[in-house]
Image (cartoon, rainbow, N blue to C red; front, side, top):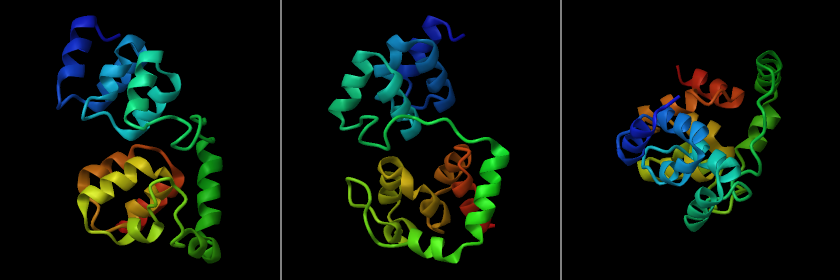
Length: 170
């Protein structure tokens, strides 16, 4: 358990460890709003706070336009790893599904497309796509211009599609 003083220091630290921030948000809901505005709070944590945080945290995120409904709905449990790996293997064998995935149709409120996620060289836009268009993270993972810290973060998400895209980079 993170003690109170350590939690206060971490939420005020612009270089705080994102994993520590997640632990603080989980163990100390009263710090949710402070965690949410920390620059090291990653999109998945903001989404979690938007759904499970206290009223103050949800209101704070809503002021920034970040609600659970706006970004993919409620948080869903991940499938069992074996089943997820099997599905990823099946999807890798379906070129038609791959072509459909790469369509340039925006499915998020910000208008980001798979083509942008795959080809942009603008690092700020890559970060925005990763944050605001979670359905395009696998494309970001395949983009050769994606910066190393984001690649590392994507690898920690445990998403089979993202992991397959990251494996194709090597």
